[in-house]
Image (cartoon, rainbow, N blue to C red):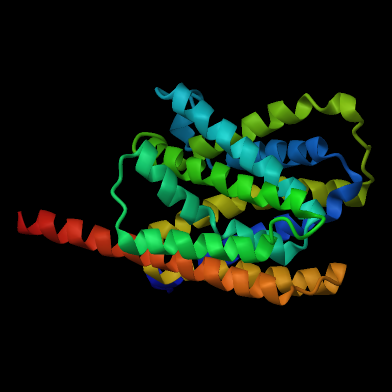
Length: 294
């Protein structure tokens, strides 16, 4: 029998693998319109979540008392998803993954304005280090492809707001319902792009495109399960395995070799997010000890 921390470690690892495989398929699917790939991400995500809805909620699974917040979560998630799909097609895999690690930096900034959280000097230092890392990776004004570097940054902004809305929704809503509405919104949005010329996939491509939705669905579930079973401090650093996978897959599939600036920039971004992460743990431990003493 595995311990809770070992189970959490395992769930986080397979979640990272699923997200990485989804990214690979999205990057491979360049012959298909983005709207069509979004359909597969959304529709097969919906199919997956119907298997995990509790039996007692099958007849009213869609009910919620917070439709407005669900709408904001879906809109911000859609912006993030479309942006990362564009980035994956136009930029090296390792570059996209490196910049995407900056999401906690934007979450820290947004939490100041949206949640009225106080941010100390250490987290501000982390934000500064992270932005320096992003600047090193993107080289503003130098590369002819810089227009595409804006998309992983937009992804980080969208994902940051997603994190904040999920934090608010999860106090009353089950994780599967939050994810279900997001998958539904992806599907509905994608249907509006049919007129742009969807391509009929062969059987092999159909299976691969379907895996975009399945991997996306199970990856989110396994991520939640990881945080449920294990100490956050143990499993979160595993997320950076995604960069290792991106470098390996990018090299062997697309012959992409990460540049020194990408590696240096990603190192700074990872350091900054680890600082933010450690400060969050410290802050929570202080709050917990105060509540116990009181």
